[in-house]
Image (tube, rainbow, N blue to C red; front, side, top):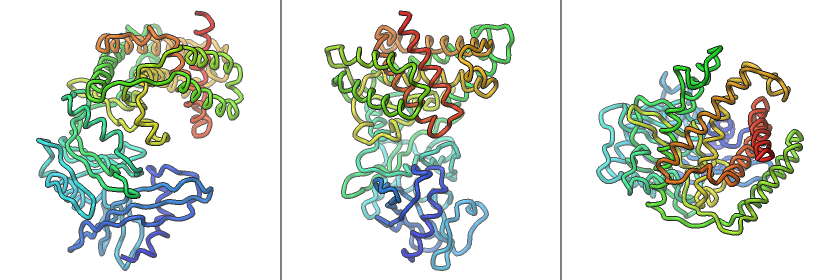
Amino acid sequence: MCVNELPDLLSEWLPQQRWFAAKGRPVRSVEIAARTPLLTDGEPHVDHLLLAVAFDDGSPVQHYQLYLGRRAQSRADLEHVVIGHLDGLVAYDALYDVDVTAWLIEAIRAGRTVDGIAFVPEPAAEIAEGVPGRVLGIEQSNTSVAWGDRSILKVFRRVVSGLNPDLELHRALRSVESHEVAALQGAIEGTLDGAPATLGMLQDFAANSADGWAMALASVRDLLAEGDLRADEVGGDFAGEASRLGETVGVVHDELRRALGTSERDARELAAVWHQRLAVTTAEVPALAPHVDAIRATYDAVAGLGAPLPAQRVHGDLHLGQTLRTPYGWLVIDFEGEPAAPLEERVRPDSPLRDVAGMLRSFDYAAFHQILQWEPASFAEPDHDSQLVWRANEWAERNRSAFCDGYALRAGTDPREQRMLLRAFELDKAVYELLYETRSRPAWAPIPLASIARLTSEETVR
């Protein structure tokens, strides 16, 4: 393979991929940090590449992995993932090649190791056989390949040193025989800069499932389509599912405590992180100014608790889109934590209230996402008297309450009993969302801003 031609091709191709995490930042160079030939006889030729991407702004180098396939001629099913031509061969993203995915799943089943890349099966795992792999078009930051309704391989496109928390926590939950996550079947592991790195993980495929975000949106649409029914009178009422989802999250937290133990977190340090994020957001979003004093007061109240907070490993980025409803119940997925955070922060024990707050925020998003599309004036004018807004608030509050009811049932403690601390976690999450939306999706920024107004007004009246 002519390695001199490939970096130029990748400099053009990488920024166009939806899983590329640095969109909008000019790429200075792409270098091949490591190359491992996997298939060398006949067609296709396949190399596993670790790519080091440098940027014009001087920010830290990012690493990505690519299964690079090469064939004499392209195939119709691979045209959309062609990278270019190398040495007279067509180069492409080999995860879309059924011959390559057949080799990958067999490598995991057999426990192969190829030049430092280990394909590791879990003991007694039931891995798919005799069905072709297909790439699922559902993810933004990774790529998933499914084989029938038995196995799904998540390939972590961006690679960092250290054990990926998604793999770590799934192994921990498997050790306590959790039924709240898709069972782990295996992993692909390698190295980066001399340290262990997780390249992929194979799990049970949750066939016939629906994600929680889509289900919640359908429920909101059902409610808003009815002119005179309350949320509990609509056929698509979500509260029962919200309660069952709360139970599932409560069980997962208990299982993580049993598998990995507990610790503590300094409340003052946590509040300092929140204050720092608030300062950055305030500088960029003038509309936040009327609420800043109330937010600071809430954070200061947490700092003044005078005792450390109970902490444990948590999901870290929990929302409705990280859940699946199967015919048998709810599953929690994607334990990577906040994608933009460094690994050491994502694996740090934290209060379970972080996950609870993330889910409560998600109910607000589901309710008001539809309103923003149907009636944007409701957000542009704070005093706008809208029946749709009233009904969306009713839906959000009903499902937030149902989720907490379910969580309390299985966790043994009601998160609403820690009202001030839960509000602080919700406010921090909303401030984070406001900054993200302002930078990336300005039309969505009114959703977290409206939630901040609600949360700070609740503090004022209580």
